[in-house]
Image (cartoon, rainbow, N blue to C red; front, top):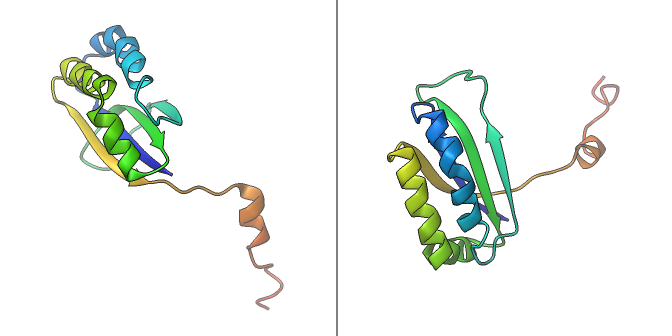
Length: 116
């Protein structure tokens, strides 16, 4: 799976973000090939020089589908809204997404008794 990750800086006015976020979502959710999305409101900054208030992820089957989605009419409209609401204080990147569930992870853990 492949995803587009959007990080919105903490310096973006929360009221403006809240006002325009539904419009962004409306357009982003029309992007062709979109499988699912996830939004995280960041409440604690632990480490690093950059501080963000929101992380949004858009999931696709492949890098090609993600790029096509961004180039679509809905993708371009979502991008314009994102730039307007953030004033350019946004980070975007693509990532190869993989995940595992705890049940599978536990199957591959070695027992502490094996190493003794």
